[in-house]
Image (cartoon, rainbow, N blue to C red; front, side, top):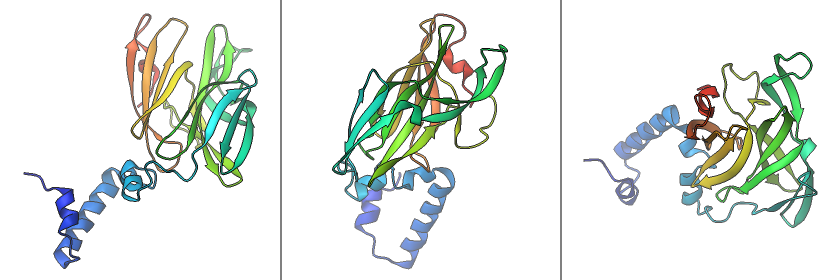
Length: 230
């Protein structure tokens, strides 16, 4: 029979054996699932009574023919141009040579936006390039701060390791962004109407971390998730 953490908290008296047991538990969590105790985790935010009141509760909307994002937080209004968001896309198609290359891409259009209800972070899906009926998209996280915001890149894995935190593999058409509790769900597709859902969980930074990919509709080929590295 497992032990109840609620009972552990209720009967905690700072006794030596209790401290030792909690230290063992914390070391185990930090070794296997450090994100469970991060500042952005559901547990920490709930424990601190921050679940429904992130430091900033931004209101955002896509404007200007999807070229800009307008956000309000901390009593200020910000207009963010889509080309402010840039990332190194790995193994992307080169129009001149027809080869796969690593190339810096800047945003062309905002596709989707959602606000993390637990943290107030703004997640945007951005079209980076469109060529020969193929869309290349990326996901960015805007972290609202007093007087501005910080930009993070959500990294989609592929065959090779990332050279740095400013790189990713590209996605197709981003159809929707949503949160289920603390996890980000990204639904995306391609010109053949293949559709998949990719899941990200809280990590050490607001950029989050890849968890898995599930094919929802497979009309051509093995499915979009087959292109995602683990």
